[in-house]
Length: 212
Image (tube, rainbow, N blue to C red):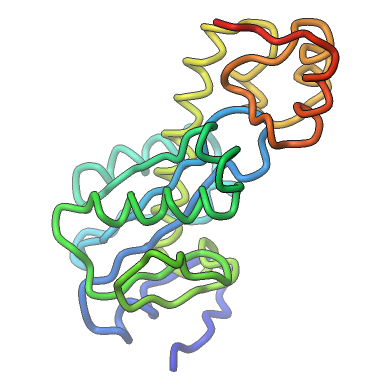
């Protein structure tokens, strides 16, 4: 049985105890009103683990970027998304799991075990897996995945912000900030908004839907 890591920083204990090729998996973007949900899978090289890996939310943007670049050079990294259309069709939880499954499938070599942040294993995963609540603060592999997913999704939202200025996606990353909510009222719903989410769903009845 895997032992709980009680340190403040994540470590490689879970991976070492498993004794095989382990992928850490995390997702970002369940809560926003706009944009995809993004997942990353990372298999670390035990001889080349970047220093300072931690929950992406605890790191500065500069530190995240440095670690992201290091991970691309010394780890097996895969990123995947589930689209807004998929989120609206199958719900955000299933979509986040779909993104995780895609990220795992995209690794250069399949892992022998998967460590997943949270408390649910994606139903389509056909590999041995362990869930870790607050895993990005406990496992360096999951922490690495959280960093990669955050960087990649943020870049998508910055690109979307250039297509649809006014919503503040370059800073709020699609979350329901005051600027974003004001823009929804004044500018309407874009193709990048999640129509199944209540604030967006309510706006649809006001007839302000952008078509491109």
